[in-house]
Amino acid sequence: MLQGCLMSRRRSGVLLHPTSLFNPFCVGDLGPAAHAWVDWLAEAEVSAWQLLPLSPPDEGGSPYSSRSAFACDPLLLSLSAFMSDGLLTEGELHDVKQAVQQRGGQRSDRAGARALHTPLIERAVSRWLAREGADAPALQRFCRAQRAWIEDAALFELISARQENRPWWTWPAPLRDRRPDALAKLRATHQNELTRYYVTQLLIQEQWDALKRHCATLDISLIGDMPIYVDHNSADVWSHPSLFDLIEGPQRRGEARVVAGVPPDAFSDVGQRWGNPIYRWDRMEADGYRWWVARLTRALSLTDLVRIDHFRALSAYWEIPSESPDARTGRWVEGPGQGFFDVLRAQLGPELPLIAEDLGLIDEPVRALLRSVELPGMKVLQFAFGDGPENLYLPHNHVANSVVYTGTHDNETTRGWWEGLDEGTREDVRAYIPNIEREGAAWGLTRTALASVAELAIIPLQDLLNLDNRSRMNQPGSTEGNWSWRLTDEPLSQELAQSLAQLNRLYGRGSA
Image (cartoon, rainbow, N blue to C red; front, side):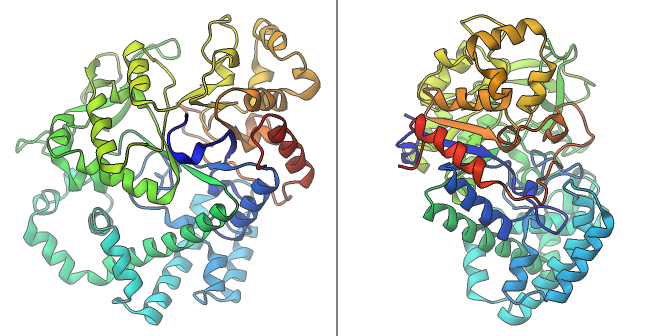
C-alpha cells in the first residue's frame, strides 16, 4: 500500500504549480485563484494536488534550484490576500494590475513580479510590523518552530545582498567561515532586515496554511516535491559546510571537490553535469542525519506527501570531479541505502509519506532498495511504448504500491508527445489503447492511467486540457522558456470537471 495513511483508497491527482494559476498579476499565487482551483479539483472528484518545489527558484525560474531548501518563494504571496488583511489598499493593487496589463503576455513573468510585486510585499511587511510589532507572539512562535533554518537563511540573504550576490565561498573569510564575532555583528547592526525576512516567511506560511486547510476540508492531499541535491550557493551549504564534500584547505576553501550528475546515456554522449555539491554521507550518518530529518520535517509540515527527486542517488550516485567540464569522468559511489531510511523511520514514524522518483538509469540495487523501504515508485505512460510487453511502464506491469503519470513536468505534453511519435511506436500505442485516436491521445492516456492498478494516478493539467508542447513546463537541457506556462483567464469548465469525475468514479478513484 502507498506509504502513509492518506492513501487508504485509490485516488487521482493533478500536477500543477501555483505559479501556473491565472490572476491579474505577474505570477500565480496562493490567493483566491488557488482556492478556486481546489474547489474545481473537488468538483472533479480529484483528491490530490501535486506541486513543484515551493522554495525560491533561481533566476531562470527553476524551483529545483534554490538558495534555500527550507524557505518558501515570496512571489507566491497573494497581493489580493494582503488587501483582505488590510496590508495593501485597493488602489495599490489597481496600479499593479494596470502595470501588468501594459507588460502584456500570457506566461508567468517572474521578472515582472520582482519589479512590481516585491515593492508591495515589502510594503505589506512594513505595515504588518507597524501593526503587530517585531515581538508579536505569532512571529516568535514561527521563528521558534523554524529555528533549524530561518536565521541562517536570513543571514545568507543579507550577506549575499551586501556582497553583490557573489557566491558565498568568495565572501571575506570571516563571513565565508561563519566566524561567531562576524555573525554577531551582523545580527546587532541589521536586526531590522533579518526581522523583515522572518515576517515575509511567516506571511507565506499563513497564506499556505489557509490553503492547506481548504484542501483538508475537501479531502484533497497535497503532494510536494524535493530535489535530492541542494545548490552550492545556498544557505544550506554555507551553514552546514561539513556535511558536503567541499575543499577544506586554505586555498579554494568552500569550493566543491566533486559534483553531482548522471553518466552518459542514449540521450547524451557526455552525460549531465549538474554541479551540485555531493553530501558527506558518512558525516550525516554520524550525527543521525539531523539535517535530513529537519528538511523532511519542514517539507511534511507543508504537504501531506513528498516526492523525492532522483531517488537512485540514495542507492548509488554519480560523482564527478569538480574540474571536469562534463560527466564522462564520473564514477558510481555507494549511497546511504537502507540505514538512511531506518533513521528516518525512527525519527519521523514507521510510515514515511514519500514517493520515490525512480526514473532514468535504474539498476537492480536501486529496485532492491525501493522494495526494501516499501516506497512507491513512478510509472510514466509516455515511456511505456515501443519496447515490447516487458516494459515496466506498461499498465499490465504496474503494481498497486506505485504512482502512475501520463507525463511529468519534464516531459512533453501528451498531445505533443503523440504528435512527435514515429509511426511504429504509434502502432504500439494503438494496439494497447484502441480508442486513442477517437478520444485523443491526452484523454486516452488519462483514461489508461486512471484504470491502472497503481493506487495513485497523477495527470498534468496540460493533458486534461489537451494542450500541445507550447504549454510544456520544462525541457531538460534547455534554458529558454521553461517554468513559465500559465493558465489563461478562461475558467476551467464544469464540463471537464464532470467528465473527469465520471472517469474517477468508473475506475474507483472518486470521492464516494
